[in-house]
View 1 (tube, rainbow, N blue to C red):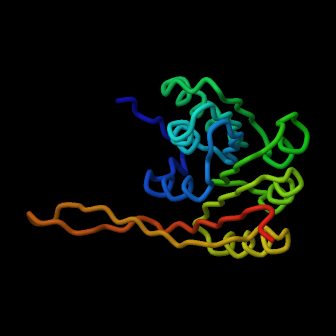
View 2 (spheres, one colour):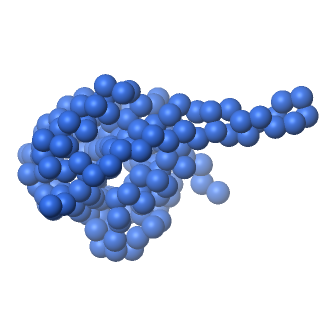
Amino acid sequence: MTELMHVSGGPTKPEIIAVALSKLDLVDNCRFFDIGCGTGAVSIEASKRVRDISICAIDAREQAIDVTKKNFEAFKITNAQVFSGESSEILEKQDVGSIDCAFIGGTKNISRVLEVLAEKKAKSIVVNAVRIETVVNVINKMKELDLFDEVLHLIVSRGVPITGETMFKPENPVYVVVGRSGKN
């Protein structure tokens, strides 16, 4: 089995990826954007769920871009473009085409990224966040852009051994904020 290479701040846990991707409503032949792609784990899992997906992975950190490229190669992801730089600028200035679904795992300029995604009429957007301030900002911006659909608070706990028995050890909670265009 191929092992995913890591980078600080990632990868997103598989259980969280499963929920996030279910909220994106991925379909065959979609254009999927992984913004703040980190290790590329979300893109890799998305490529397993639908046929002929077109992936655009973006991260401002060179280390993340290097790891994503290596992970894409290891997992035989050939239908992807990888961009290094600030997400909103890439979305605005590069010829990235249409956007069906966008997963945002991290970005410094999230308000502007959401504005650009709204301008490009992204059909569904999922933002994962661990800081409550980010969640509030994203919800407010999505409401302003008439995108907000729902927010989830997820906590995954893993069983670990303790004195011959098992206890659950929680991992950091994650907030999943979902936006959809054309809701009304």
